[in-house]
Image (cartoon, rainbow, N blue to C red; front, top):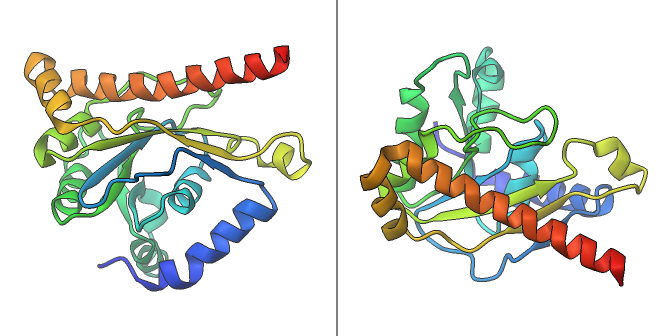
Length: 214
């Protein structure tokens, strides 16, 4: 089932408006966003992440979603129209979800993959799983790392104590990931991708400390 263009015409503007008005979402480094086949990889802190990262990206995206969201025919239809496809988090190997991601990226789509495999319960990043490295190797696509903040505490955002933030890093070229893949397989390239996400987080923390000093 294909992603519906109505998502971009109707739903996307609604989410962007909600993000700006209620959550004061700030997006940094969105310039020079790659076209064509692309993997978006970042930290995962909340079930709110996919729709808001999708709102931050200036193009249509696809993403994995937990299989429980596809249990009924109506909900499954809706999720597919959003551009989602199921992943079974209890399975050690999600070959179906990974193959679907590869298929989409090979067709020139942008696909969101969370390298940690599941959301963090305390904000600390979990170890990288090999999936994103496998998809990057299979497709030869560049990877756009990103770091998200605030989605794990929407109440604080609504009370103006914080805000949703999405920061994009520098694109990771496929040649770099292929060298890493040859050295240590999909796991090594996945760890490198997640390290680039950590670097964005570290830069954000340093910038915050410098502002506090000023």
